[in-house]
Length: 68
Image 1 (cartoon, rainbow, N blue to C red):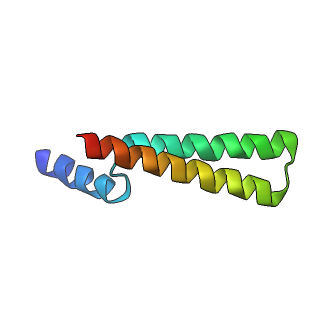
Image 2: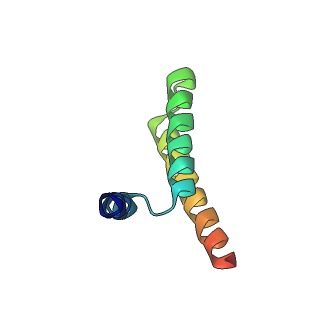
């Protein structure tokens, strides 16, 4: 049974290496999606918020990993 668990963990690790980063990216996407649904900003502004939020999340993750 532990071999199956190890295989599952390895498979998930291929797609989600940093769980905190994945969670923050889902949050950024949800926040921008909610903003688009409620405020209807221009597509360029929504795209800039999405790209900037994802870049900021990635930078924070890299800096956190560098401190370890």
